[in-house]
Image (cartoon, rainbow, N blue to C red; front, side, top):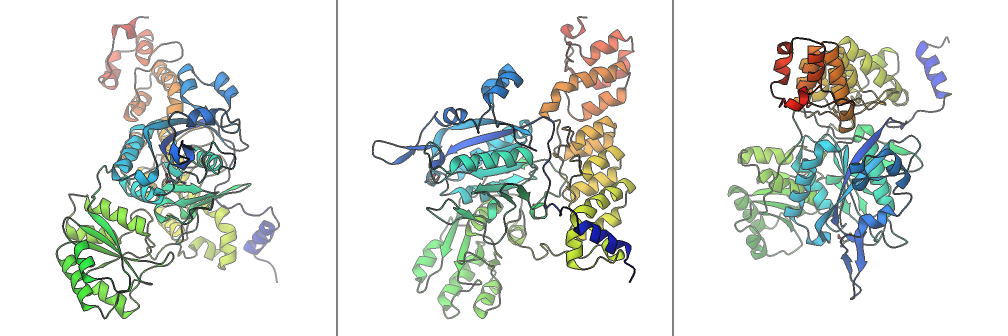
Length: 588
Ligand code: ASN
């Protein structure tokens, strides 16, 4: 038997070093910035006179600053500007990782998370919105007791999220020698500063979970959180393994925004044998608008309780949204049993495999949308909005035409080759503008955010190529606008450097922005464009929202250069019409 090309390839491949799983870490240029919102929780607590744990204000950052593996004072002294010095802490150098600068914003009222409620979730969401463009990622330090509720609520309030948000905490305060908090913060910072995982996640004991899938499972263990219906998105060991396929990516051309309201008229009703009808009736009284009904097993209620059924039907008819979720930790509701089927017929919405925390906060979010009617709300409760429920198609991929053509149809062959071949095929088809072929690759599980050896993604390539339709296709299929390549270049900067104006405008619609670390060079680039007489480049920066009056290192602005070079300023004026031209700007 003469081996086919694919067999030879596979054989060669198998004798190689093995296939890496998930994005590979290599060193990147520059720094990333992470905002840490410290809201309270055991992580920053100390015992008071009565030997009870209470949050201690103004102690946390001081303590962290003194830990050499949490803060590199030497780097701060030599590399950061005066304003950055007092603001940022810096993680020490790590092989294959970018430098992570982080700023700790301590809340004026530190809370045990048992004291947190919807107003706290809204405050956190708005704080992230305020600093969204200034940071690459976000870490929220939070008490563990209600952490799963906060993570779930934030996941819904953040619409079109494009950056990493990680919630963490600890079982023992950082000030104590056996604390799990230091490892949890460190892991969260490394992930938030090095990976774009555009979800609200929870990091605990070396695992990164989707936030709205988590529940607190232990009052005592360091492994305090789990996501029973979904494997972790990332695991930290000697290596960091990110399961790129598991990431829930935005697929809209819209900017990140916070939905800042929640409906408080929601509740969790856990059934138990012999629950009285009076108790149920009391629960469904106004102003209640939404209830998560925690039923038995695969979503069952007693079929011999006519009174209970009638009460639920009546409540549903009055417009109360009732979601059927199981009391089991793991698994999904389905209507296999007669008792479950009756519920679905009575208009009770199946909650699939949502955790009670996710179902409750989703209900609160959906009910607060004033522009949606009741039917839309019912429909959205069943739809997978942020990866909170399994939608049936999850993970089911079919072999791509390309792999089948090569005779690589066994699952093992595919799995081995996918991580290497598919990214290269995506890039090739992006260059060729072949959307039908990309559709086929998508159906076989190709990840459109995969990076090449220089961390460049298909979106980077498409922005250079100037194919507007391709950029739009990628954005609608989960491509991430905030990924930086080895040199800190984002897709937006690529579009600017190739003066693809329509693409710049599209990326801006999706929430792209100039990276802060790059802004130091914008003045240089503007002056250089002016010197070359490139109106197109100045317009590229203008469309990307740059401040055109930014000076270069010698203090000149693009406008100075235009006058010095003797160009006719009127030709450029439409670029500058929004810029305040002060007499100082003309001084040379
Ligand atoms: N009661 C604490 C809290 O939730 C528990 C913890 O953080 N481990 O704030």
